[in-house]
Length: 57
Image 1: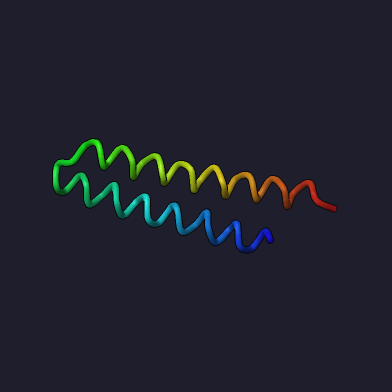
Image 2 (image 1 turned 45 degrees about the vertical axis):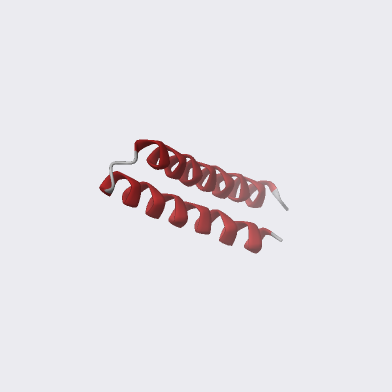
């Protein structure tokens, strides 16, 4: 289960970064903010998974 969540977290980070950079290039600040939020959500999901692995015996 954890490996799937890690993959999902990494995918969100990559997609968020791609959307953010493309939106900046096109001067679409609202879309850039959405991409940044998606990237941040991916980072938080990854942090949660790393914390779960730390405390799991």
